[in-house]
Length: 367
Image 1 (cartoon, one colour):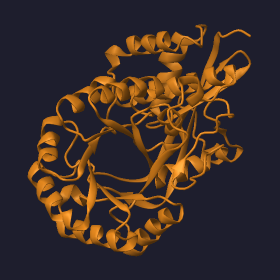
Image 2 (tube, helix red, strand yellow):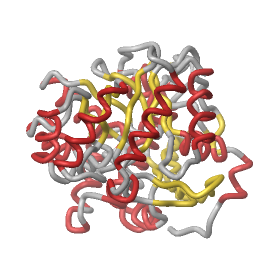
Image 3 (cartoon, rainbow, N blue to C red):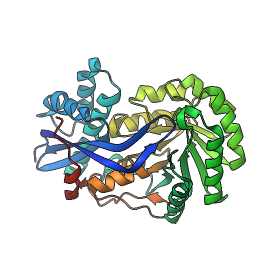
Image 4 (cartoon, helix red, strand yellow):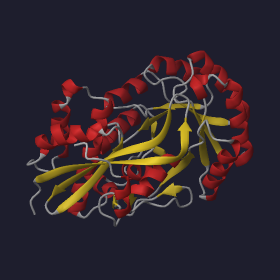
């Protein structure tokens, strides 16, 4: 069975939200997904990223001609070729998302060709990975927030997160009201997380963290923009809650900057942005060398397979948006059992395929 990479094929899908959604610094009403299918030896692997449709063009026009005809099993070599070919395009943003989707597809392809799960191929560290329930958008009415939080508890999830910092931190009293509502809803035994999406200044973030200590908040995500690790380190030094960031780690060097600045108590990584499974493993190892755990940002159904192979993985974000999108597009999603996701050791690759019902969300081919 030849391991020559025969094709990299792309598709673009857009799934609308049930209602407009907002966080501290952005608003949206749909999520776009670019998928990559890698083919070799009569098998195929699937990867994707939640990104701009133009990522499909990067795959089809730049990466596919570079990789097709190469040995599909040589993942480090293929990654190096992708990075070299896109150096002058810029290594972040849409380019990083395109590389991430290809890398995930190649790992899935290799694991399927070998009849192994991805976690089994890398080497399992955990049988299951805890998740925290995530949503709580800033424009939710209180009733919607309460219903969502109660839904997480019904799944056995013991940590939950809501968004704060609406309109770039312009409504601190409303933030406190929503945190108090969340604490009343989940009770004292459940961990309460908040995410400002970089909406505060340093001073605002420090004052906010002091104010919500009353409600036992234990995780303060992106209090300020992660573009400025030294500012985040100032917030972390003043905080009791764990300060976390990393959703905009586009490459391992971005992770290193956060770690070395002392900016985070737990490093977040997003496999659909950071460079796929290959880059996750590099960045997670670097965090581990500095005594830090890592947490998966969004994309939970892809992330669990590499998190299960990561000794210093703490948990995964079980994001309501990506639950909706993944359910609309893919078969083979894992259920939450006792507050955790557990990859099936007997399922080759990551076990997911495009669903037939995904066709209703397909957009014009951007490749």
